[in-house]
Image (cartoon, rainbow, N blue to C red; front, top):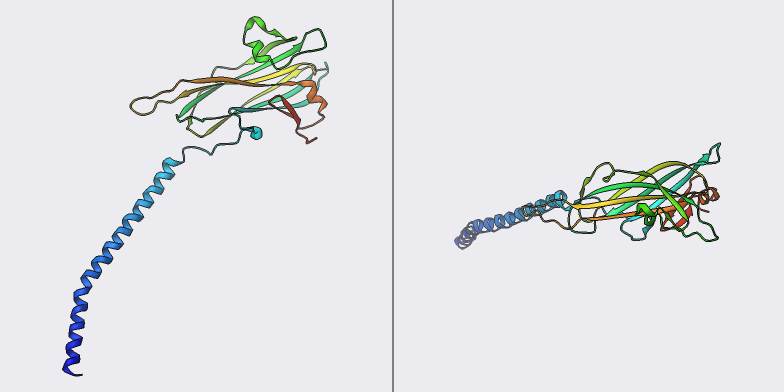
Length: 243
């Protein structure tokens, strides 16, 4: 090898050795940023899992009508008794969604009323149980005499929390009654929403209350001839046997 070639090799080796520290510094800096970005991503994922999922996904209300609250009454005939009455199983399900931006607690009150047709004439107006029961002096309305068979406690057995915005809360009132086929049953669920205190300023919004109900003519349940019973929603009755 000539002296010229040896000199060229020494120059190339020197340039290589000089360039190594700068290359390592740039590589280390790039890897450091990648580590930082990876750490930020992991932290964001942990925060999302811990705080982003503040409850179950909103549940479609029964029947998918889009009402809030939305309820449905299920009635089943359990058989005829010796005195001509029948045993009926009634389940009223109410789905309530928190459509606000405050965390709420919710309380329920269940009510069962029985109506007897007492009016004289060819026309009886239905659908007024809660209107008649709202005033103790007017329990006879539109040709029907109403009596409250059961009126649960104001909070339906207690107030429940953990009701964040966007979540839903189901509640069911379950009764079993002995009644004549010509009687009418009205099942109602009252609800009371109260904001939970949050933060240092304890910001609150007004409470909300309401009552939803469904009525059913018990004789119509018998005429459905369905072992599974019927479903009543928004005043419309459907057989659960699909006919």
